[in-house]
Amino acid sequence: MFNEQEKEALYRIIHTRRDVRTFLPDPIPEEAVMRLLEAAHHGPSVGFMQPWNFILITQGEVKARLAWAADKERRALAIHYEGKRQDQFLQLKVEGIQQAPLTICVTCDPTRGGSHVLGRNSIPETDLMSTACAIQNMWLAATAEGLAMGWVSFYKKNDVRDILGIPPHIEPAALLSVGYTEHYPSMPILESAKWEKRRALDGLIFKEAWGTRPDITP
Amino acid sequence: MFNEQEKEALYRIIHTRRDVRTFLPDPIPEEAVMRLLEAAHHGPSVGFMQPWNFILITQGEVKARLAWAADKERRALAIHYEGKRQDQFLQLKVEGIQQAPLTICVTCDPTRGGSHVLGRNSIPETDLMSTACAIQNMWLAATAEGLAMGWVSFYKKNDVRDILGIPPHIEPAALLSVGYTEHYPSMPILESAKWEKRRALDGLIFKEAWGTRPDITP
Image 1 (cartoon, rainbow over the protein chains, first blue to last red):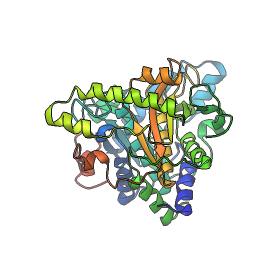
Image 2 (tube, rainbow over the protein chains, first blue to last red):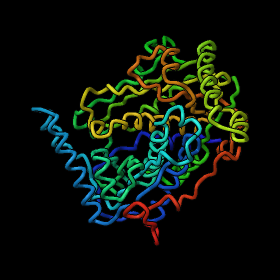
Image 3 (cartoon, chains in turn brown, orange):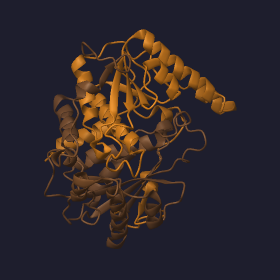
Image 4 (tube, rainbow over the protein chains, first blue to last red):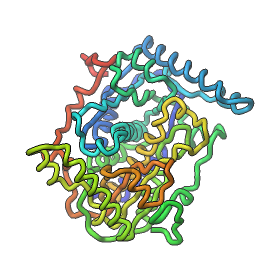
């Protein structure tokens, strides 16, 4: 169905994708934005509920308010770190909302599809997990399009609801900054900042039961 | 960075990916399984916490117990549907755990990375969303490899914890059946079963604020 080159393309895109926080002001072609949203909309969803909406934000004033909400949260979180770790935290650039020409707020509507969404009744958080799958599709699409994307998760949901007029029952699942960048990172920025390391995959694999390490691979 | 063919490959993989519930017994080459897990492990994660583990299940006895847990939940859920909708529900094949040669239980450890994971402190469910992004990477990799995957979300988490010996604080986020299939669906099975329809993307896009439809696209 897919040849070696197509497989390689996917793996290369998956390995190239990074969380980016530094953007150029250049606008994004309308067709590219629509391809990103199409990719997201073709993500899987529990009971095929498609719980997502996409709020596209390009106005400077709205972006400034979102950046304010993110910065407020960043300053509040900094208080939980001490000494050297706090300095290190405050030096991290945690978002690029005002730099990026486009922010996409991806929301999740837990009521979509009615009271008995197939599969969601057993595990309610599958609606948010579906939304995350849509975001991952969008992120890979952005990477393939030569765009950079950053997932901002520093905010109080009610601040974002207030700024964007989102109803109380809708989850503002993510703020995604999208744009071009001159500084596409070759490794995760939290890895190059020596904040966290990539774990060895082998240590994360078990066989038949939790804690049982495979002697031979599957 | 990526040429037109590579972009097209990604979009074709995204559009081909389906939730599959019918599998052939043929085993999966070990290298292919490792490529799926590598793809998952290169998913994004909040604060680079990499909260996932992968339990590979191939033993018939363990699969039978997981299938039992899924079937018990399916029968319990059926009670919530009435009349024609119940008949329709009971006709759906909701899982293929015993048919598929491999089941992967993907877990999420909310304690990984310590008490102050960057970004997760603001939105705790970003750990599960990170795990979902890893699953989506794996799903696209499976599609590219010519494999079929099904995400089973019909179970009580504590049943799955009991069967696989998963500690109480670890989330069994998904059971994924993986294998080859002779019946790769061209559209979502819940769409062909007339359970749900794909929504029009245009209706899901807002501009600058919730509820504001774009007159011109971004």
